[in-house]
Length: 243
Image: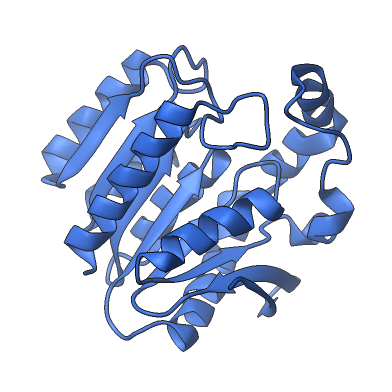
């Protein structure tokens, strides 16, 4: 059963979904936000024997309800219109310094509810960037990192998310969308080289035929086979690293 809690942060109060018991898993939502689909995914992971926390990372811009889509995003035109409505402005406003402050609050809150010991983090879409960064900021606690249809994981900036991998002690499961301009095959190669050089156990692959957003059944990007594989890889990762 997923409940909604409130988390104090240095920049305000954020709502979050919480479910389950056992080792902690920090769940980073996609750019669409907290909504029933995210609650379903949180509940699924919790059913495997984990405490799952999914914060509303856009709390500085309004509540989850305020920012949620009102149209059916399973219609491609509606999904495109929603992303034209200011979503990327919120994504870009969540700078690494803000995300780092937030991550400390998320980790502390998760620790209050989860079993003692190592934690995992998982992110979808832009949440995959946050998952990689969080593993770097909290390398002493985060031992599993999942990232699915992530974008912008490799950039030419000095704070590129993939650079956080070198300082971690985590295992990784990264499954990328096919034909994704935000995460190209060349980027996947950079990730592979980085993970290998860091000696991190990992899965790092493109899911054939799966578009960006493939795990989200409430949008036109839903790809059932890709979603099943993401779920299976995540469960295996968590069980290996935290179980």
